[in-house]
Image (cartoon, rainbow, N blue to C red; front, side, top):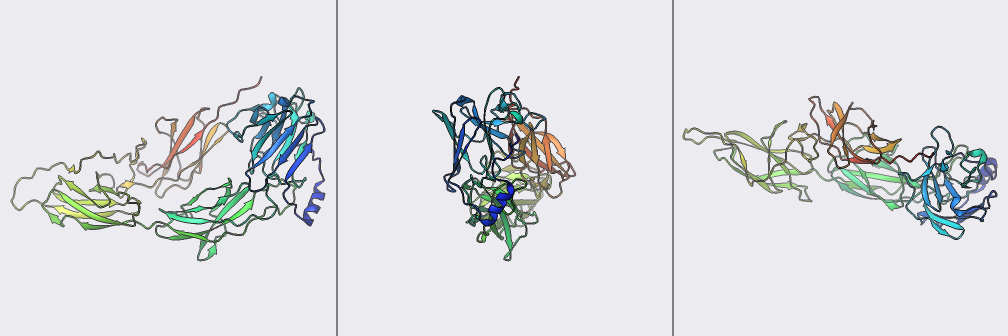
Amino acid sequence: MPHLPRLVAPLSAVTAALAIAAPAADAASSHTFPASGTTVEIIDPGPAHDTVHMTVTSDGSHALADTKVFLGGDTTTPYHVVGTDGIHDARYAPDVDELSTGACAVYDGPELVADAPVTVAGASFSVDLPKGEVIAFESTGVEVGVIGVDAPCAGPADYQGLAVDYTNDHTTLDGFSWDAPAAPVVSASGGARQVTLTFDRERGTTYDVYSVVNGTRSATPVLANLRGAGTAVPVVLDQDDAGQALEPGTTYAYEVQATRIFNIADGSPDGLWPTSPFSVTASATTAARQTVRFDSGPAATTTERSAQFSWTIDANPAGDAPFCVLDATEMSGTEVPCTTTGASVSGLTLGAHTLTVYPADGEGAYPYRWTVSAPPAVTPVTPVTPTLTPTAPTTPTSDRDGDGIQNTWLISGRPAPAPARPKAAVTGGNVRLTLKRAPKGAKHLRVYRADGKGKMKAIKTLKPKAKSFTDTRVRPGHTYTYKIVAVNAKGQQSAASRPTTAKVGKRPKKHR
């Protein structure tokens, strides 16, 4: 929706005013629209609140139900419309930069701006709108008009209303002053190859996270443009500046800086992006690598066909059970039920054996080797198929997590590391996946998809350096789940990534 010519002071006057002093946040703003007498009042209760309150009052020359307020965004974000019937999306006509004539192209789409109800009272209606989203400082134009034969659907030339340009009005709708935000207060905690940072994330503000090594802050952030949502949202870091996985038992330090979201349009004064001081350095140590110390086991050579093991797992505060495999090779092995303190096997054949214990953190493998020999008396020995004690169903080694995806690429008896979880976005009725760097040794990336609660099916094989994939074979109204696996030169598949989902919205009804 094109904005109307500005009805306020020219840009040169605004620039001069800003050179004198930056204005503070206004408590409220009210504008009268001469074409219809309709008034719009936006009241900002201050930075402690996540919403602004908008009230639209009609002078009675038009039905209140026909009065609409259009909330603008940028060129990639749909405009929204507010009326007595609620909040809806307002889409552009297919090939022109204006609203279509069909009921102003207003419809219920998948990207409603808020669930807050619109309250109607007499000749006015009101609604609370979120800050930093719909009412983002200096990015939002507010256009008010009356739905009718000619206005505002016929086009810009016949538009009845007023474009309110809050940049030139010196009005801050987010309740933020033009001063720099306060330095974030950051806490950090360590985990398995990760550090979690927690800090308040104010609406209308973005946050950049920098690493600190030997007291020196990185030149560029390791995470940038984290948008504030009004709450403290944990941020999980699992890579260093070079994109490598964090090391176990290592201390990492970070600092966070906040920046106001002002979204200055082209031609507006520069220097309106105040940033906070850097936070106090927050550091945490990743969980130490778990190690296995065998306390007891069979002799190096024995005639016993069974074996008892006991061990201690260091740096295992959660008490997670390890994964144990008898006679593991790159392609085979028998899973053995085991606990945090030991295991037992029976029905062993003659020859060399190895019990390999894989701690729950997946950071290492600890083998115990011994040989079962025949008794001194020479008697025929019939090989016996190993039986496991205690008896328990074993998990198929080719599909460890039961998602239907075969994980045949093994490293030290365990599935090769999974690729990073992809990010999904619905664009133009398609699902676009953003991919991260493929694991070491991968020759391909394979995309699996499930429709709703259906089974995972392979839909595409990509090159290892692929950064994105667009799924065009999706249907409106369906929810899809995606996983990514790495494929080695033998065609074997690694563990699957964590799933990500995307819902394809229903197509709007066409207006006739």
